[in-house]
Image (cartoon, rainbow, N blue to C red; front, side, top):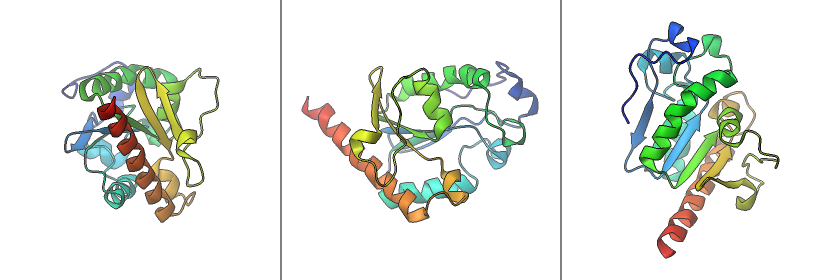
Length: 188
């Protein structure tokens, strides 16, 4: 799917410089889904290229994750980096759903609560964000044939909520989960 041009589904188009679509590497097995673009992403039209993106890239390199797509739920920057509204998430969610349909990832990684809430809104069970202490079963979720893992957004690390190395180790766990998913899909 190509990046939409001239989207006006919600009011965010009024303040955007660019629609921030995706960046990818290799033949994507994983889609990483963040919340919304920040200032640098809006200026350059590329997701996760600011400070949070540097942490995400370091974690991907550390875990040797080579085949991925990085995107956001919301494709335009909300004013003052505020959290996107439910309406904005719904409107941009159509684009995200199309991206997932196009790539058919083996694993979707929710970077933070906003993307996690998009996929699992109304879910009565408690969803545990993967941390160093949780087991794979506590962090691995399935819905509508898709497999999910949730981790903290890289900005959480920037704010001092987690040590860098601990965050990078989560991506090693993500790679291990992907290996299990790949094994199940080829062995069944």
